[in-house]
Length: 422
Ligand SMILES: [Zn+2]
Image (tube, rainbow, N blue to C red; front, top):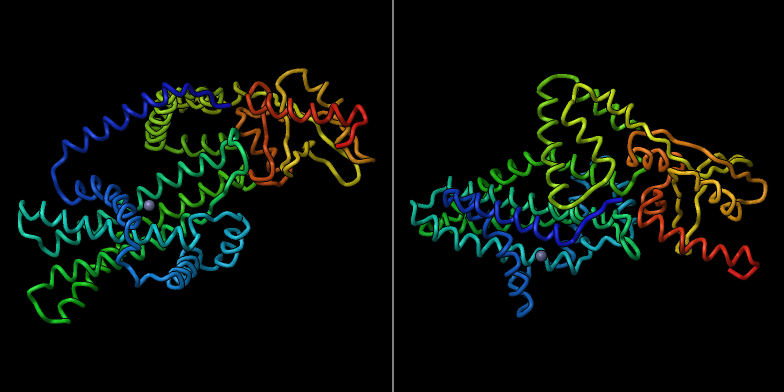
């Protein structure tokens, strides 16, 4: 399990924020600077404005938003749109697609974008005339920034949702990519409108306005297009965090194949892995899985050897009989299933006690999975049981989650063994 010291974490966050802010402050005041510094802030100001006033935007009524959600799902998922709708609905709590929540965000976005343009045009105006080009660049930076905030929020949210230590009902929200698409559409529209209005002012022709608006939408959609490949990868990564049974097996085998293919890839991997490990260390996160990653980052050419040296035997209870041949899953009162994984001989006692969950005709025995990391063992178990991370939790001996779950479950089971009612 991940071990963090909260005070380390706060200090590390402060350091990262301070160095990011210092880098940014050293950069020239341009479109990127304006978008980066002010866009998020002005969006929050938008929420403050909305708290006092229902907002200026009446054109984005809830049914327009509902239509836009459907259009974005069709556009983002193509042939898979029906399946995507189903999985978003099945996830239950699509907070980000709640029309009222989305309406608030959309309105805050529009207020933020309008304020940003008013401010940026004044600041940039001092450096030179506002031209179509400056305006276009500012629009592109806003779209890029919008995407970045979205990726960061998405990662933070999915990490919270997927955390094994998460207390209470995890609210899986796969709707946020769609919500982002909706917001991006509204922002693009507001951007094109406002820029066209500013740039065509003094020129009374409706034609000029329409021409500039169309040009702006072109520039913005090119920027959105450039993010599309990253967006698909991001969405897939988010999905695999929640749907562990869909992950591919043999993670390190595939990594070795990728890293060893050529030197450029090995160097790139080294850079990425070291930055990731430095961040983990700064945040006070320690986990045996990270040791293997660190060893490979130091010597990518030795990946195969290092992976086999890290081979660990993970033990678990296994049920067979009556067409069943699976890891033993212990049911929780909320319907979730738990697989306990052992690193020691404590498995023996678990197998004895676990018999109460086996149906008549089932035999409970022992099995072992050999894998280089807990992460990989976890994937194997999810694939064997074919349940995603919402329904199945895999806990490893020695972790806090393992201890607290086994205490609460076996106390309950103690009652069953003594003949008490469940
Ligand atoms: Zn907001």
